[in-house]
Amino acid sequence: MIVQVCVGSSCHIKGSEDVVNIIQQRIKEEHLEDEITLAGSFCIGKCTRTGVTVQVDDEIVTGVTKENCNDFFNNYILNAGRK
Image 1 (spheres, rainbow, N blue to C red):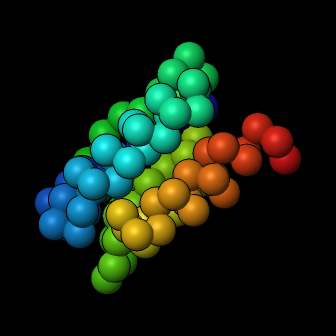
Image 2: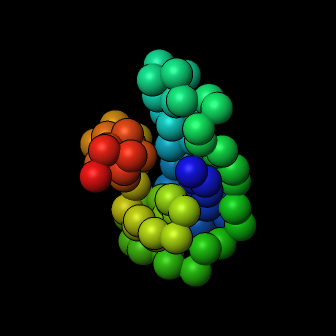
């Protein structure tokens, strides 16, 4: 699985560094280092007023914040292999 977090200027201002840190921490906690590639990406082209844009494989998710990042991780990353 490839997870790309937008680190462009708009998402950077909206907290992409926090989102990256939380996702990195959760990947380690869940022992998924060999299954997930985490990368930064410049502008995915889906800017919103709130939150950061994250692409998980081919799915684009907008509005990810440090407050909802754990829910995002559970729904789009952790449970993706269980669907």
